[in-house]
Length: 506
Ligand code: F6P
Image 1 (tube, rainbow, N blue to C red):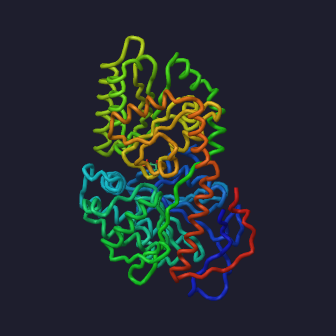
Image 2: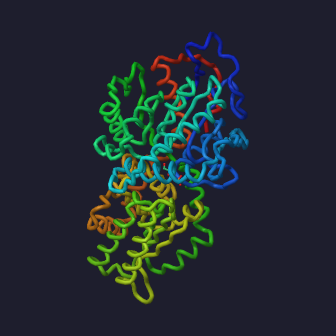
Image 3: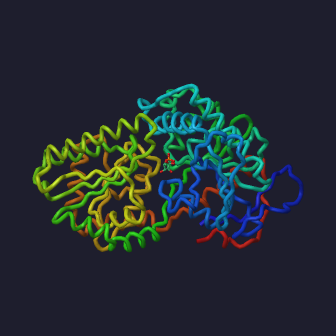
């Protein structure tokens, strides 16, 4: 494991590293971490789901620091309000509200109506509006001006996700000279795809103000490097550096991880809970196939249903012997494409049950509200097949959670889209192309009929891919690379520190 043994200081800042920011719970000599993300999972909101929160929560609880972003609230005078700070354990959560117009245009309009589909290579779903793009830039500038006064000279800054692509440049415009890392939780599309958004060149240039830009996979990294060369005149240098406007920016692939042992314990404990027992009892003699997603166009839910339809058409002997439970938690309902998708899913699930159902059996149970993470873990452990088949996904932590949730003596089978970032690590799953409904049907049957010895062999490989990793090791690798990138980029020097690495271990 990489440790973070150094302090970092500006090469121009003078001789001594003196007071680093007070950082309750960790060594005072460790550089404080400032995380900036659109959503801030405030402790008052309870247990967190969602890739970004799952990845960052544990890291922040162990390392401490400042977490800045949107409060989740909308208010009329958002811009004039002071930043709200809540301290919980070693973390200071600092949040700001958005106005209704900002929420509508920065979050719904540009982030989720343009960047989300575009970066997932779905340009036909882009709903571009020039004013949305302007408000997106304005919100980033405002967030930068609100967080800048809270940043100390020795802080490490880590910006997250597609809502905040212009933030590194906006922070530099505020005079912030600290090392800035950026991590993109979603995919990065090929350069020719990006042209659907007229602002993309400007966004790529803004992002290049960071010292390190991290991606989920090498493929995303390669796409970004190509875009930076095509749209921003960057030149590739050895060691994954890009040179642009006389400075160097490091690129890296850092696949997001879960806490596998903790998730395994939770799944085992919750498999005995009432909700799971009731689910099992409601499926006498049936094989359970489970899908667990946000209701999102990238998740391939309609294609999954086509696969089920094809299975029932071509192999009717599976009637009464299987059920697909699909939990598709409603999300981003203010975005038109999401509402249209929900209507289409409701229609098609009704059609499938109408066409293939029997008075005493329905092939598909479709649920549009989310369930808590612990119950989901129990459901995963009791399912024979986990169906994780997005059309495109940055990583997909549900795939990793499904593996962690299994009983090693009688594991279920993961059917995974080859277009999910997780497929790079979880190649012992049954990998499918979600657009090919025959292949989807075959994969479901292969998974339902797989022998115990094959299930165990595949599961052992899958578990081996995740068991020694964690959000903490992910964060540690990113931050070590950030220091390396900032130093090699020439603006920073390292100051050796003999502090033990305990604060980052665990
Ligand atoms: O990176 C994608 C992501 O931010 C995930 O962390 C999370 O699962 C999802 O999108 C949540 O989206 P939103 O904040 O729009 O609800």
